[in-house]
Length: 640
Image 1 (cartoon, rainbow, N blue to C red):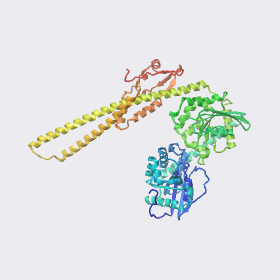
Image 2 (image 1 turned 135 degrees about the vertical axis):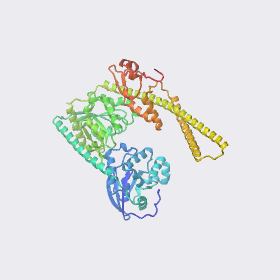
Image 3 (image 1 turned 180 degrees about the vertical axis):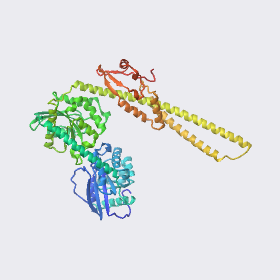
Image 4 (image 1 turned 180 degrees about the horizontal axis):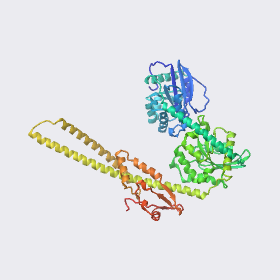
């Protein structure tokens, strides 16, 4: 359909539209342009909203849905936002005629954006694409370029999205909303899309609605119970709470979680710079009638590969900036991104560096409260399993803040909750033994180093075994081909001798057999060629590998699983299972501060270590954190 007018079609009397897209792309402005509205309060859409109007004798209903973060897949979007997106389907019964998927023409569109779009749109059902038109907002940014030139220049990601929408797209200039022709042309394309779908709207799956309702009731009940529990706990501590004339706070959290802006709100002054958190930063300021110390820390990164020992040491150094300790550790968690299992693991990994006692002094501080879709913080917690775990871990100590408002009341309430927590801890500040903290950091990175070594060695061994299996399989195929050719040759010779005695033509069965044999030969040749390519790749990998001794993986279970995965044309599946097993290895230290590692007998990992006594084990593998020296004693193909 493209950007041209979509033929002569009969206008429809009633049109229902759902707007989809990431945050900040101009969805609401597109809705305003369609309805001829000029008002726009600039606020972000946090829940699905319905608006009505009429355009050229067509009664139009527009449902504006909340957007996702551009470039982030659906798994990173809070459940409340995803629920609101799905709820938009049921705000215009029996269902929307068309979905307008809005992207902005003033920014690039790459593979990450494509993944984000598809994962969110398909929350509504795969059939949505048949009813979807891609709308480019901010068309004025194209200037003299055509939309086709823009699409061509953006590359495969955008072209793939347009192909998914079956070449249905349109450009809107939001700054020239008064131009009726662009809306008229869009309505013609919408009508053409509806006509192509037999004039039927998209009928949402009622199971989605029932699931949303069931979840809503469960969340509301859980939120009410949590509110009552929190209030009961606070009532018990109210009489014990004493006002602190001095309050010391440390902020911990993931990078870009809003720690610095939270520190600024607490101190009522712009003292921390967002994004400049490579080092700890301490600020002391008089807030009301008390002296408040806030220590901002470097945020840890989502990607484990970006985690460094130096960064972890800098994070824990925050406590050394307050010699007597801190009254509260505020664990900053943003509400505009989902707190996934990955974030939970990273958070727990960093928090545990301080020791188990830190949880008694920790309060979860939710930032960006303004981005919640008109739900209570308790409802948001109940929707996310990982958040429930975190809040429960902190004994229901949590607080939410709006980072866009310097509201004194939200800071006052935070101070009250901190004082209640201090009362529950009988006034004791959090002041761990820093030697123990730094030792845990050393242990953490020694474990990472060991797992990387095991991963490299396992990868090489799997490649070696894969090469061996492919070579054997190639030999078997060639032998089969040779036997097949010999059988064919004998049949031809026998037929030739018989023909000399009594000439006759080849039967239909003989012809069919010859055709099948030729096809089989061709398939074998193709398989051998592919094996040659894979063998070459594996050989090059092994040649480039610099690993020395290899673990012994010759157990029957491991070998059979590798063989099975090869036959299923998925040679890496078993390897990833073993890598998952490596990641779960229990690595600890003994009384002599030596690292120990336990291989479960059920793992199928046939190493010499599993047969050793404790003394023999220590002799074969030890790692001393004080010296940084380590020794490995694995059974391999080069050892017995």
